[in-house]
Image 1 (cartoon, helix red, strand yellow):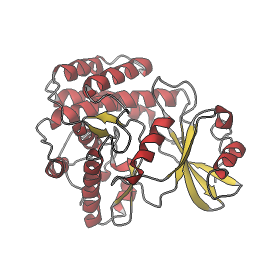
Image 2: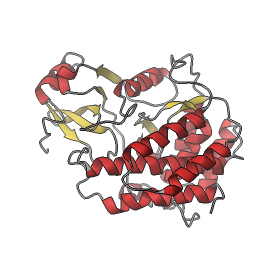
Image 3: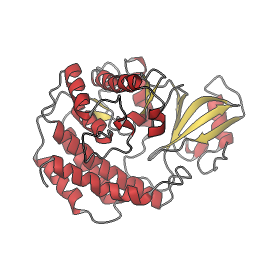
Image 4: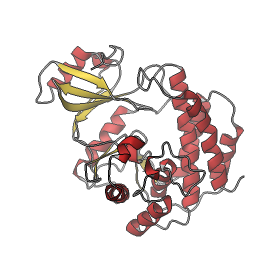
Amino acid sequence: MADISSELIDTEKVSAWIVERADVEDPLTFELIAGGRSNMTFTVYDGEIPKFVLRRPPTGPLLPSAHDMAREYRLMDALSNSHVPVPSMVGLCQDDAVNGRDFYVMQFVDGIVVRDIDIGSSFSEATRKTMSESLVATLIALHEVDIDSVGLGDLAKRTGYIQRQVKRWTGQWQSSRTRDLPIVDAVAEKLMAQMPEPNPTAIAHGDYRLSNCMVDADGHVVAVLDWELCTLGEPMADLGGLLGYWHDPAETDSTGDSETTGLAGFLTQEEIADLYSEGSGVAKDSINYYRAFAQWRLACIAEGVYARYLAGQQGDQDEDIDLERMNASVGERAERAAQLLGMI
């Protein structure tokens, strides 16, 4: 197990903090989970046994409103008695004397994160179909949660979701961009001008995709992870985001992060949209608008991640990451958004 820099985890202080709150004894060890693009995630071991998962922000300067550990913690804790599968929470630390920055700890979930095509290939076609269906069913379950009954009624405003999101991500783009890309600004203006009538407000995960969920061996979702971007908003934006990450061989200009979901057995983008619409009762008429919004927002997010990697704020995770590919993806996603909006 690789040593963890004391800049990331103060092993002694963090271990003591966990021991006070859970049935575990020192010494604990920490392992950085590769693949994170925003907040940093660690597996916490008791000997050889994974017991917990710890989340903390990246190092260095942070953008305003980003990397809010308390928000992530509150969301998962609130959903613990809902039909949405989330890890059990251990605690939230907001005492900088412990580790320099806020962090939270949750119970380790025994599941599989399908983060690449090799992992996806290990499942049968039938299981990949089940995985697709379970992803959609879980998203519907999230959108059906009664916001007030779980104590999240004051999480965010319930109106003006797209306006707020376009304003937020335009600000993030301006704060983190490393070059000029006029198409990003042009798409933002078009999104504001073409807004469809909103659907009833729901809990919107904000980054719902296959690699942000854990599944069991049968393909059923056992935990939804990475709630950093969650808010109250438009359910179709979550569906658009899921499709934005979903590689589909039928979509020749698909911008999915990998070819995993192009494997036989996974549903197509059209089938996912139909399944969601049938199960939720939400019409899919405006789906291309929300697919465009998702692609534009992912372009803004990718630029922020790219900027953090250039600044060395992501630690040693993904040392072999292709920064040129990440750089190029920003423009590609913005262009895909423009296509979906009929701009090009």
